[in-house]
Image (cartoon, rainbow, N blue to C red; front, side):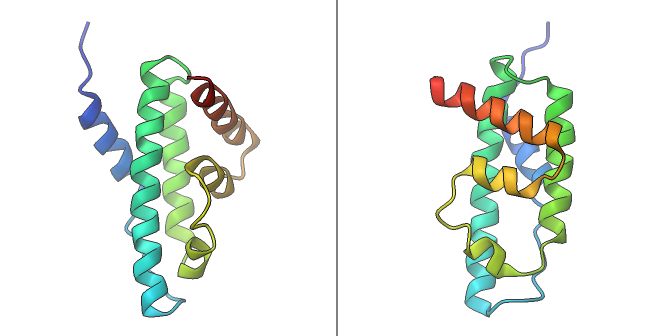
Length: 118
């Protein structure tokens, strides 16, 4: 059985979620702040997703679909203010606001429930 390098997997998931968004709206300061928030979200949520895979909370294939959806959603947000408004939200709330598919929302909900129990 192959062993997984979890630091490498976290980096992979982090990169898969973060398209390095290009902002069309928002002040320069908002754009800088939003970029930092995106990076922070991707880093934190990738760590949670790795934990969920490692502890068999969620199948890795479901995680791959989820990260693709999140990547697309982040890429579609061109207004830095959207992220600035999320500055006090945790990674679960942000992830839930980025997906529209009910099955993906359910995956996030299940991960959050298990994560809060640990």
